[in-house]
Image (cartoon, rainbow, N blue to C red; front, side):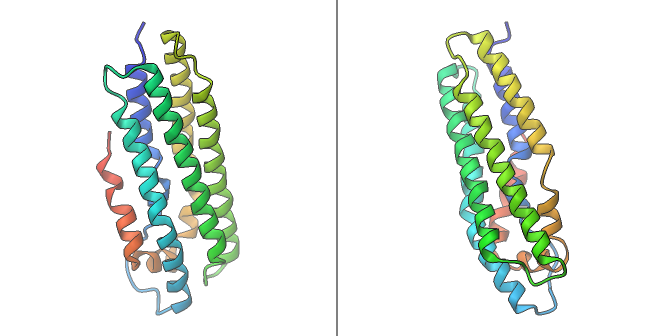
Length: 197
């Protein structure tokens, strides 16, 4: 029996690779042709995203921390459930922020905005579902618990690889440039590469 540790390490590695979708909200380059409306939109979104990005990062860190060899299944379960709940809420809040900001002042802005909101809400729902799966794990039977964690790691892996196409589309071109100028987006994205598991 391999126990929960290797599986939990896999969970942590998967998380550090994928859960930071929100941190993609940082374009690069500069100059969006002086589009003040777009700059205002980017500031509103970036300012709302920053605390959520920190929340996602903290949830990631909590799971990373709970992957030591002597972690008890009950502790792992509690930490993972809380982390998934936090991530679900954070993505929901980012979706709400993008929704409330309105359509960015670019071609197809409304469609890009709606697609991104739909995607963010979908990611939020996926994390809520993972939390429910963690809540249902049996910590008394270590083999069953490890199997359950494996299933969650697999689902998480799929989640980390899917999805952020609409966010990427939203951030293309001038929107990305406008976001890159916002201090709150710069600080939200910086630590993303630090957790390469």
